[in-house]
Amino acid sequence: MVEKKIRQFLVISALSHDRPGIVDALTKPIRETGGNILDSRMTVLGGEFAALMLVEGGWDTIARLEKLLPALGNGMQVMTRRTEGQVEQEAALPYMVNVIALDHPGIVNDLAGFFAEREINIFNLETDSYNAPHTGSLMFTANMTVSIPASFSIVQLRNEFLEFCDSLNLDAILEPLKN
Image 1 (cartoon, rainbow, N blue to C red):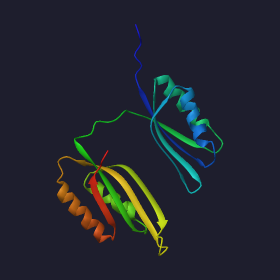
Image 2: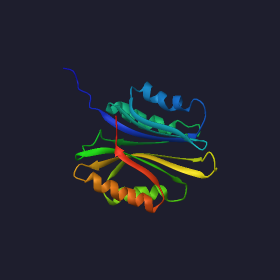
Image 3: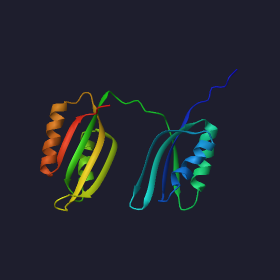
Image 4: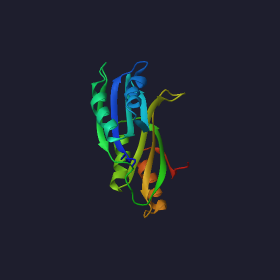
């Protein structure tokens, strides 16, 4: 009789001073233990490397990774947390939100508050800042994916969002996510 392996899931968060070979150092134990990276985000912010990964494997793989990864050393801080696979969500529509504005403190919190007040989940959020080409003014961009419950009136939500953005002098777009 073949034993069925129950899939286990581990979220890995890592932070380290950026250097060549850091992704290799972080992913090698995953490969060596037979883990599979299902989803990941890795970036450099300032001079720091940051990573988030969702790894799957049998119970033995996950248990070994929980011991191996935090001990990687060389200035890398690693945290792990067991999780479940994709959690069932109520019927929802994925929407993309893009925002551009003159940079000022509080924009991310204002945007997060708008969606939190309406119990709309933010699944992905990326922000950036850059100097405008002609003026040199510091600009801010935000790109996010939100999950809007199917019961919401999209027209009403879009109007509320655009009024909210106008009040904060943010240029914004809210449109269905295209695959």
